Length: 302
Ligand SMILES: Cc1cc2nc3c(=O)[nH]c(=O)nc-3n(C[C@H](O)[C@H](O)[C@H](O)COP(=O)(O)O)c2cc1C
Image (cartoon, rainbow, N blue to C red; front, side, top):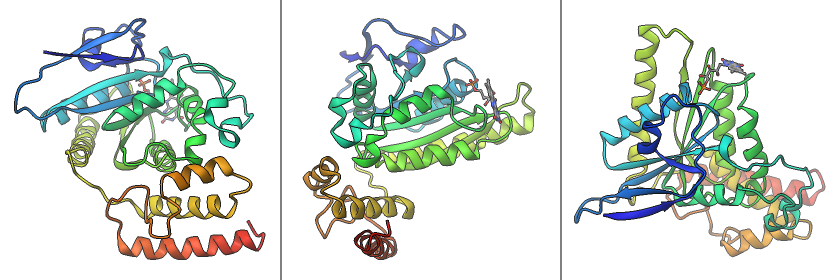
């Protein structure tokens, strides 16, 4: 039996199950998760659910159903990161993280630990209810605090599933979270938007189940060890656009420039953050966009 240490913000799905109905689980001490190391057994895939809701409601229920569907496809461990239990201060708007480096952020809270947990997962579920047609403020605070990772992508190679629940419509939130994850450098490999009114018709329940089953299949496939996914055109364009800005404005943004250079992303042959296969048509379109952007920056149009 192998014992794995888990950060206090993370709650393993097994422990969550025993806590159902008690509101958000805020672990105040280090939790331990036991994982059986059976010889020959595949290492379970580790999925981190970044939970935008502060309660165990529809979004948590959907994530748990996703877990069950994925477990049927192979060994998987779900961990829940309850943002409501984290020390998460508002962004102060100084942009020091962007200009000087994230280590100079005046806030001293759980954001670095949250980012580390995201790093350590094989896959991330960005799970959010819709509040006033956007993500809840809780999740938006985290996204704001991670703004610098849109300049210096940190989650490259990471597979993301966007999960949203709402009374009437999830599309704006799905699109928003997809764009955020792509700017972080991650690949959004599945999306699930569920309509969850207080009384769910049998038809809507079946529809939600179909949406979750499709998303679970795509996410499980993308998380298979050694599986390389091809980035979307939008992700390729974000890479190319970022590269044009960082390279052409290196004097104004030296921290970004050094980061991109260290990662080899400014090498003329680099087609993406990772060496994953890129659709040649997307590369061709990306080259044109990058060329035009570089020209526009040099001419002072951007
Ligand atoms: C404060 C608040 C605002 C909401 N705003 C919207 C909205 O703009 N559009 C919508 O379709 N549903 C809205 N809803 C419904 C929730 O998105 C929906 O019930 C969701 O499944 C709740 O997830 P949870 O149970 O995980 O918190 C809102 C709910 C709350 C509590």
